[in-house]
Image 1 (cartoon, rainbow, N blue to C red):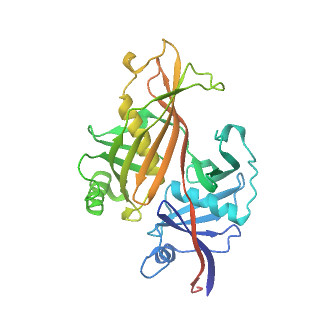
Image 2 (image 1 turned 90 degrees about the vertical axis):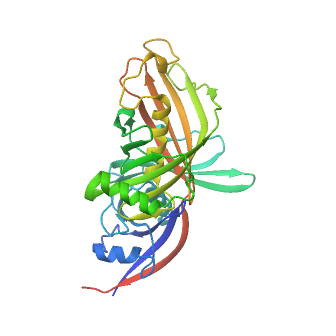
Image 3 (image 1 turned 60 degrees about the vertical axis):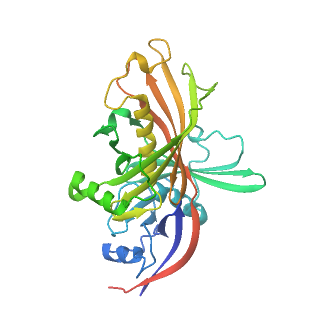
Length: 338
């Protein structure tokens, strides 16, 4: 028998089997991984996160879907990988990268990692704060840059973007709580996207219109606007799991970017003069923070939307996904040796 020591983690209910394979000790088949993820006959999880050595970064993340096959980028899986890497005592050679540090006056400590994933290098940040005497830990993953023109619009309420994994986003006005997400999501996934499928997100919004203007002495842009006025309620059908999951990190990023681009009316079109408050030939930046409420809890997406009067699209940069990453238990999985 081969024994695999693993830990179980979850990020807002999106749960993973995580194990250390930096020594290349384990070589698992798709069927073995599928069995491990089975909630009746195995350990049970939405996917598997394997930590391996990296030649260029602190560690490498390989993600497998619940069907046992190699998956695309998993945002919550990467955040759980950060928590696991720290528990293993993996040393961060990134140190405190200045351009990756997050400004937070309540921050008591910050660990910065770089890691490889299916989409290349990512920065991960573990930030510890104390509020009302309670220690809180939040896990951040930095994504690459996106353009509003990356978003495909089907109609007024349906959109698509790939944020490391493919996401179809459908805004609805009816009760999200009573929707049959499995049935509706599976239908959209394979009717629109064929055998490869897509993740399907159903979104209902609750919003206020508060906008707070702030200054940033470190920013060269003309002016900066910050807002935290969107709460989006989401349920997601995930391909590879072939069912609804309690949260989806890359889905949260997709929804936040689409919501902003939808509000700014910049999807697949050039900016016009009505979209800018600044003088001509200037660049302005919006600091955007959007809360995504999923069945398993809250995720937060923050980014800078760079808007140039003369530019063809909005640039989204410094895109961070943040939220909890919770250790659940550890165990040993035994499998027959070939």
